[in-house]
Length: 276
Image (cartoon, rainbow, N blue to C red; front, top):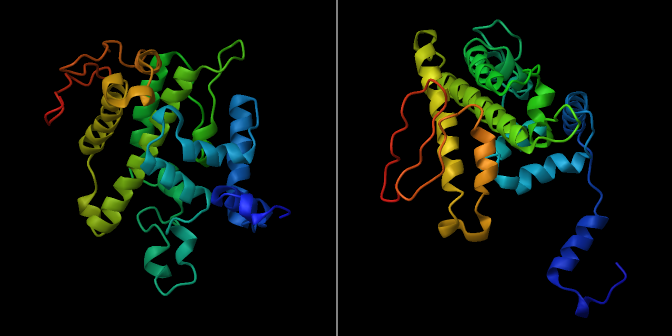
């Protein structure tokens, strides 16, 4: 690489090797990334570079996206989830590949998140829409491209400026809801052995979604503690602006209790454990 080994560090050598290494382009990954970027451009009005998708999943700025979601999103961009056509050339394709409840030939990730009746995706998206409409913004059309590119999506004000608080709220709502839909599908398909009589009920799904969003709200406030997280603590102003439109009774964190719940979801209980 044109440098003396005696003066190079291991980090510099590694970066140089990665720079000169030719990455093989995966057709499925290229197709998924293009779909995500096209949707971002149509929604936000700007087209970010492909590297921004991967960096956003890696850095998780302001802890907006959870580590579990980033791993899930990374696999989705690579189409590495073991669903749908993954089973096409295996002996289990007749039992694993189709969605028998919907009569779909392939239970793809898009089918699970946006079409399947078993995953209760329609109910979950209705819950998300009802909360998002409290912000006064129009609910966008949810498609696979938006889900794949949620880490780089931007919500803009009428003057064209990026609204960081609404962007963060939208990313949290969509990512948490998608991951819940995926978990519900896996629980029914694997844990409940795809038994039609053991589907999740409407009340159960609603309670699970409310719990997931309230958990994120509480976690956000916990991450604002400078006494614990020092310089890595989230700005309280950012967290307040993120949730203020859908949780109007939100209050600042204090030493003993985290207050603030979503509209119509009752009174928030104290979290278990000593540090409550």
